[in-house]
Length: 359
Image 1 (cartoon, rainbow, N blue to C red):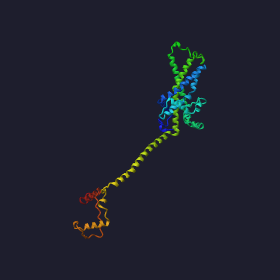
Image 2: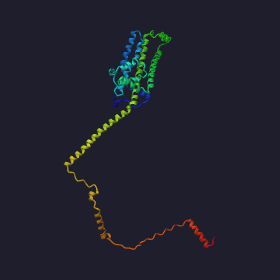
Image 3: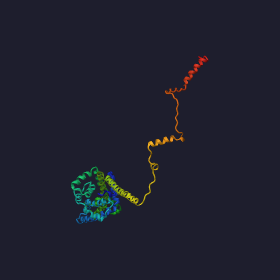
Image 4: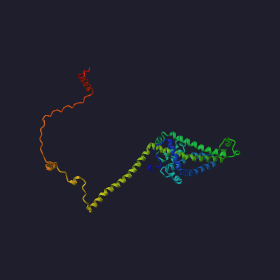
């Protein structure tokens, strides 16, 4: 699977958020989905109702169309599975592409798996992966884990939506029928037997049911496909895999750029060397003190030069000074400490007693 070309943001989502993703996918590719849907299902609907009328069972067409839902679900899944890679096929390509998928899973869906409540999630697993039966069964146990409730809720919710659309169309038509043309009761209309009801009314009901199914069934398949993508993202870390693939692509592009720069850097000294071989390059200017003043003199040479400078009369020359000093120097006298306030008060009292006779 070419994850680099996928147009959906892959990240772990909650199941209800994944259902919203499926609805968004269907809205983005509505024209491609419903064009392929009506191109295949409308002739089948006409044939089933014609067969029912010929057999004298007008209701048979409605039952057959409802039973063939797993066959019709292949069309929206084919369109959406290609559309997530930015390539929504046309209705002709969708019809031709049905030969690429196996029909065993579809036959199973039309027989013992017809009332499976997880059909929307099982459909991408059977048709898109194409794994052997045992491997597919093992993957199905892992794939459906923790989302069985959401898939069943999706199935029953879409079935209720179809029923609501079917009844809404009939109630709206009933409001438009004049009062004198309305039947006295529903039981009187059907005469307690569906076969006795008028064939045009049954065909009209089948048409309304087909339109309701055409409105809801692609949404059912799209939401199941989004649950499938989300579940595989959680199990196989598609988002991390895609991030590493994009990082590798960026590093490969950076590596090519660095290779070009290294080639240019390697070719630059060769060109400079060829230029210096043919043109005389002037001597470079001095860049430090050693090049200006030469190498530093040794320690002996510096001491001899300093002694010669000191002997020069202009600098005072050399002289000898003699003086006497005590061999044993006396210790310095202790520094007198300032008298504190208490000492001054004691001295004042003593002087007062001696001089003035104060007690």
